[in-house]
Length: 316
Image (cartoon, rainbow, N blue to C red; front, side, top):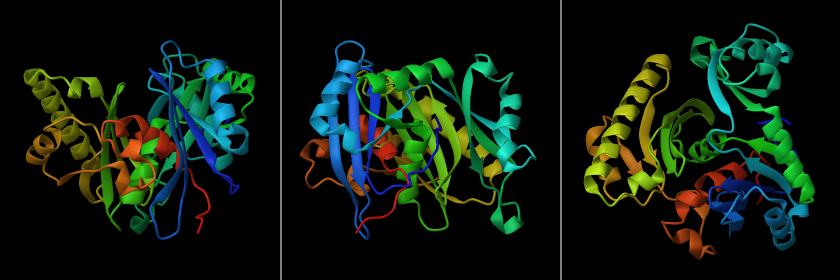
């Protein structure tokens, strides 16, 4: 099963993300000259493991999951995303060449991995369109097989397994200023994720070891330590990006919904680039989704709806 296969049909995606406290589900429609419409946004709480066919079966019945192409989102720790030098081989040989390069980089044996690759484009004005690096994503075969079996038992057809970086890329691509790069920072209960996109392509991904729960810590001293750590990691990552991709001018840093008081102001006063706060309503039409207008709920749905923004034909 491919990680990054693109949609070819007009029917929508139903994206299912397994969270620590339940399952988040989303489906969207792109509308020409308007914000993205949300057809499904639901959360199914689970006190124990959310990886159970019973919850999926319930979801399938209530949402008519068989009428959608299903995608799921891997969680932090279920895969590895690595930047590697782009092998100088024909495209049909890329995965084989990358697999060889990953054999000493994974925390499990490469023969037990499913691997996919994602281009990092070079400077098109400099004639290097393919770039000198690429992303490789690897996950254990056993984990992917178990996820596939879970959907099979629930009588749902799983078409795509996606990763959070690509979900965030999808949202960032819709908010990029023309001709400029965009940095986007989000947090959930697994930690923080910084991405930089340019012309709809993912160029940088960095994880930050600060969770959403820590950001919402009522102890202001502990919260301040988190803010300091985030600012330092952002500065290092963005400086590295400037050196590596000098042909991309990053316009600003967008801060995804967190509900953490004071973080936007802190980052805006401690980073050299503009910092703006965003919300789901900047991308999605929330007029019929009152639960998503609640800023406390938006972090839960952020990546799920981002993953639902898979490439598809724009609908009028």
